Image (cartoon, rainbow, N blue to C red; front, top):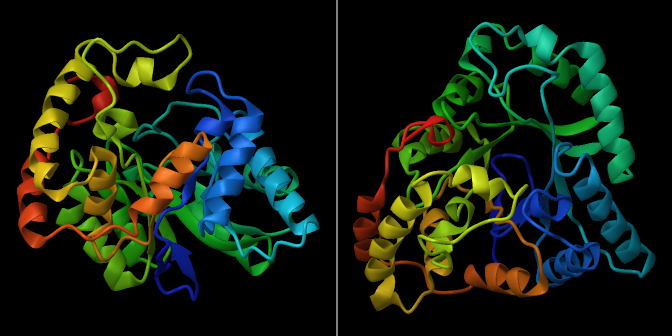
Length: 329
């Protein structure tokens, strides 16, 4: 495992983190025994960054993370593991509309209660990193929720403060970084979604903001394991994400990436990870990990040779401006 500075915040995080959405549910059947084994294997391989959220199985993911860390501590393992979690906005539209009010969706009473619940589920009295699970540009002029989080930070309930970008408007968080409101940003950045390289990542580097990259495999299609006729079970998030003809079009484009990686000897998944890690602003990448095999494959990728400048240049052509994927083509 290799490690990188987490922005300007004084600790080094593993290049490969543990994305803990799938172990909470929503991605097909998932046995807790597999989840626990995957977490343990990733930590044994040097992973020291776990990303979870309130919404990942209504706390199921957080509780599994807490169990693993508790059991490892009882066994005498002295892991120094950084756990990031997320608080969603209160009831209303997702993503928030331009007309939503920040002090209604992230009210003080709601946020304080949610932080207390996150601490209880994770078995701690202080969260390493709390991220707001979405945002809207409409709140940038008066980012009330972050003022509240800074207060909670001063009270010792939160270590670092972050935001998970809204998929449809990731650049809306640039003002937050420049304004000093956030210590970390979780962003979608992959071979298809390269827009963050235009400005967001460079601003993060300039401001010392830690960057957590999610959706590195574009929900799996960039691993090369899907076919145009792949079908997902009811209740699996991917059945919505790849609705209609989306999967067929994504598979066709991913095959072109496979050709560009052929000379490297890397699998598509390895190439996808190495592409993202090539940007110096990236602190950690959090692929979803559901079993021991995935833990070993993902954690091992960072130790492979870096992509050459020539290969990176070729891969830039796969930038795909899909607009807001969930709402249409």
